[in-house]
Amino acid sequence: MSISNYKLQTNVRLHPVVLFQIISSYERRSKSTTMAVGTLLGRRDKGSDVIEITNSFTVQHKEHTVGDVEQFKLDTQYASEMYELNQITYPQEKILGWYGTGKCLSRSAAAMHAFYSRECGDFQPLHLLVDTTLRGGRMTTRLYCGVMLGVPGGTKGLMFTELPLFTIDTEGDESIALRTMQKYALNTTKHVGRMMPELVHVVDSLRELGVKLDLVLRYINDVLERKRRPDNSVGRALHDALTSVPMLDTESFRLMFNTNVRDMLLSITLSTMIKTQMQLTEKLSCLPDY
Image (tube, rainbow, N blue to C red; front, side, top):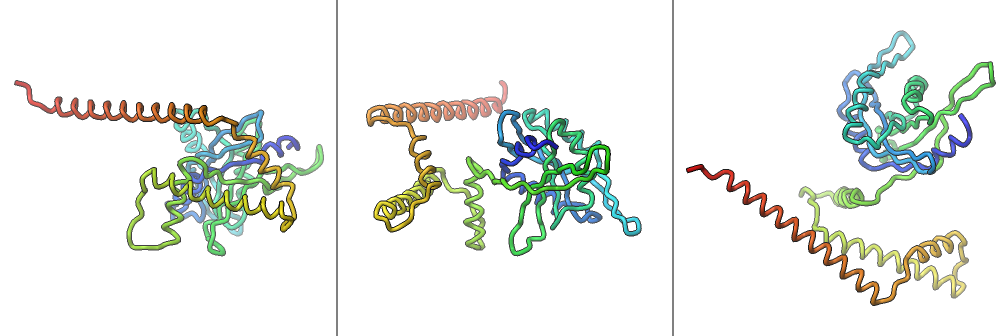
């Protein structure tokens, strides 16, 4: 594998829904199997260094031991059919690799790599390993990429290298659900948690933003008063954050805000009217004909 291809796969974003799908697959696995395997789906741009793992599905397999040799058989036809069905709904999602559960890489990893290398085409497949044994009270997640070793015309081997850059993407609507789950996981009660109104989440987000701004101001004041040694990386990050905010005067900001509010109110009004019309249509259709 070329070095450029390896570097292309170092900035990976994993959506939290994929982890829940893997956990569900592990809990619903057959009694005759000790692990769960499946296909990773997502988006990979040829001109970008970012790979997003957005979806996955389980692939049926069989495990049995012949003597001291462990044999692993993957249902490749089932995997192909599931991918074709997924392409009907989500045509932008392509095969990125496969996932497996366990404490370490299994002996079947080389065979799985060979199969998904054909499915991924020009790119090397990724291997996501999820430790469902919860060692140390947490579920560790590691990402690997296969690297071919050997000399031309000689014996060749496969080595799985752990990717150094691996981030979990918790932006957008998923972050609200994750914060709610974390809140009720830390505060165990007998009552089932429920989703709060949107305004409550806005207030909580603003409160968290205020705490972070106070922390930044405290750091800046300490640096100016020579109480703390300045950090160049923190300074660059603050500069990038401040320069990314557009400079607007008060009147332009007020006009933009009021315009967005009017558009939002108009959308709410139209959706309410459509909902009312559908309810009236449903009731009228239930009236008897005379």
